Length: 204
Image (cartoon, rainbow, N blue to C red):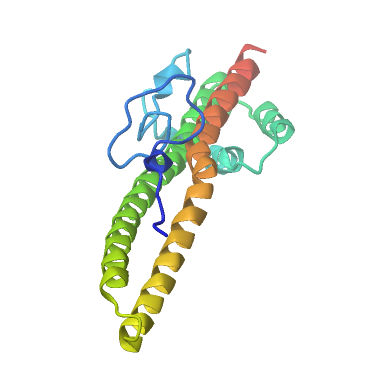
């Protein structure tokens, strides 16, 4: 029996409220955006040097801890509250620097995931092509094989086993697609949440 592959497997994802054009190697519903915009998340003034946080050991450590998805909101708020003025830099300026650090780390992680999803989709597309080719070859072999041609029948059995394995891999990857597509969305939401928390720390 011919195994049917649904083309929709490459256009299902999570996180977008409206349908967007789907790039050829992008399987998620939301648009493929490699890098986020810091200006869309931070309404206040940004430091002139967006990398200044790297030279502040305390801020660099806090940025890494806050960017980590395992860090809870309560822990984030406590870290923000602990930031103070230092070396002639006001608390407000240091908090702004902290956000640029958190944003840089989250955006870099998200970009790696986005690029990984594109590679994932290309592998799926290549596997789908291979399965389709194998299905055609199997159908031709089955039609040509004589009932007493045991070599041909053995070859057909091997072809079926290989095809079944490839289909299984394809289906397993397809089932995880929703989770894979949600990862960039989760990171984007985290960046927005941290921006709000740090801004509240400045305003408060």
